[in-house]
Image 1 (cartoon, rainbow over the protein chains, first blue to last red):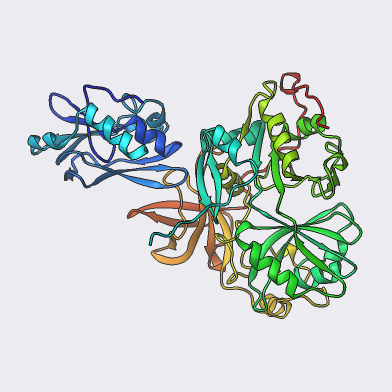
Image 2 (image 1 turned 90 degrees about the vertical axis):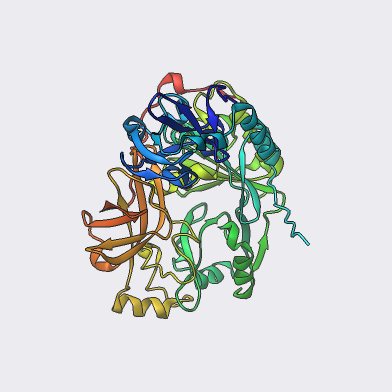
Length: 129
Length: 383
């Protein structure tokens, strides 16, 4: 299972990549594998304010719809139009072209609540055994 | 105390586990939801071949000189018109004209009928059949020790023709033939629940296991996949086929769910007939339709359908069609909104999506085309 070391992770299986002006958000390989067959993605509007731990987007697989939570509070700065058009990008490249949205954080210290890759790997192990 | 439930397993359970299937609890049975991907498995059925274990469905034998009268009193169709080695899709109603189950009845002998019932209704159906026996009739649930395989897709006929010592390619739609080398009541029928050409096989467990292995283990069968209940659902929606418990139940009339064609209203008598005769005069207050979205979310059971802000219906089934690449739904609307082209509104998470009423089925198989030599495997017969 791919868990890139340079990213941070949430308990709800989002990954976070820190950039110069905003943080990029997607779902992990583990989440993508659990969902399988992603067929629809509803992204937030640019400029929308989001709160840490609250739903910010929705991913639908054939079987069900799943909330994607904002890893930190802030304002939506960018969204991935390509993934909205081709939802299967989440299955094909969840850490790359399958990213979902970016947040311009309002309280950057919230990042400290997120997990480094090692800790996230442990969490998945606990969940799957 | 923590309640523990032991899920029932089919004779192919170990194979599903070895294939890495994601399992799900389906009416108390531990069944494969998917092996690799619902979308991939769906495409395999449409383009090549899909193999399903549907042994959770009940196999009931109704036999004896009174069998045809028994079935004719219980079913909406005229069972006396079902010829030997033929099958009939029909409905069993209660006294209120509500649907107890939808089932396929195969006439496998002069007075022998194999009735395939939905897994969730098995006990109810057997009790209902027992309680309404006419004349000299026996009703036996013969599911124990037996399996059902569905082999569906454009390659199905060719593959089974080579593997089985039975009538396969020459079998007509809704025809059934015995497989004499596999024991009493072992049969192959050209029926299915996918909309693609295909077969269902009713076999003793060990023969089902061998056939399963023969179909999957052969590397020559490119494009053949085992298929779980996930794709079974997406396939049946694409084909506009109703699912009992989701699209209809004991509160549904055959006329509401659009299965009028199964009803032989001129039969002298059958359970539920007086209600249907009345409904035929008065009409029904809701009708089953299919609708499609150009794009958007998957319509889910229970979602509202509106017109100009007024609720006119409810979604009962929905999926994303891998073949048509758009969301599809089925459900009930007021009779005024059933015409093809009618625009309904589906609201999902406060967003409105236009949903266009279309004729069912959404997808229909082309006439079987000649298969290329590359798709033609060479297999050895099972004996």
